[in-house]
Length: 182
Image 1 (spheres, rainbow, N blue to C red):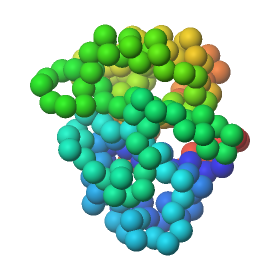
Image 2: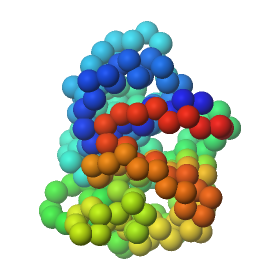
Image 3: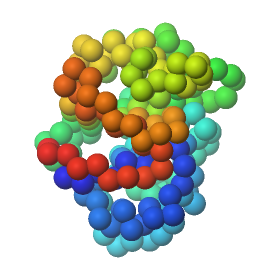
């Protein structure tokens, strides 16, 4: 299955990639204008996402028919997909959370096959030189305890993949297609 992962910066070829994909996954910090023409397509693909820390007041998910999975789980094609938006609090803006809020998520959120995050688990594809782009210890605890099969994250300026304890983790900056055998 072809997953289009889109995060953090607009891509000029998004419509072309969208038409080649089976599922859209977005992990935040985008705008409605970053999805040109997708809202007008007659045949939309299943689309799921979470917001990023720069998405204050964002409506691009609902306007493009993307299911917001923050603290929610949906079943798609036999897979449970869920997510957690934003990043660790570093200023007074919205869509940031404390480790205590991440702890509540980790303590209560059920198992999912695919986890969507804006900011990742602590120590996994972090930028350790920048505390704003460092992940959460409680999100890492959730990952260690629940062991989702796949994790999609944004929040940083790279396309990197990581295999962590058999979990495939994908970070995208812009848009790219990721093929998964699901």
